[in-house]
Picture 1: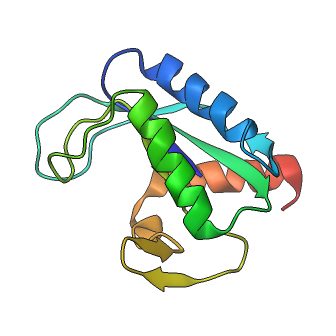
Picture 2: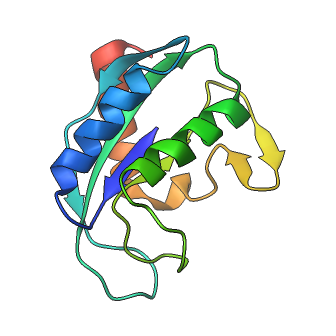
Amino acid sequence: MGLGSNVGDRAAHLAHARERLAALPGTRVAGVSREEETAPLGPVPQGAFLNQMVLLETTLTPEALLAQCRAIEAERGRERRERWGPRTLDLDIVRFGVREVQEAGLTIPHPELPRRDFWLREIAELETLSHV
């Protein structure tokens, strides 16, 4: 899971996401990368992001996990008004094991994965820590 925030108390938003993800049914946090500040992507002027990758083990389906992620984002005031715009909390399913999903609103692996160096660094860090 990719976690990101660039509005308000960014570290608190990420901490909330980690806690809520760990509390999901049939889910545990198996690893956490370090937090990393990154420049925003896309055409909208905004502040820097605080990003982090979390390795989850879950019995949830990708679709159920996505629904839970949307609810967690909403708890932190996330409003989906502007594509690539600022956000209190952004939770992305980056990979789901070796599974591939291609549905409306859900593509796994995340289509931006090859273009986000910070995700690649954070995944590498998790692989080192957890021997994934």
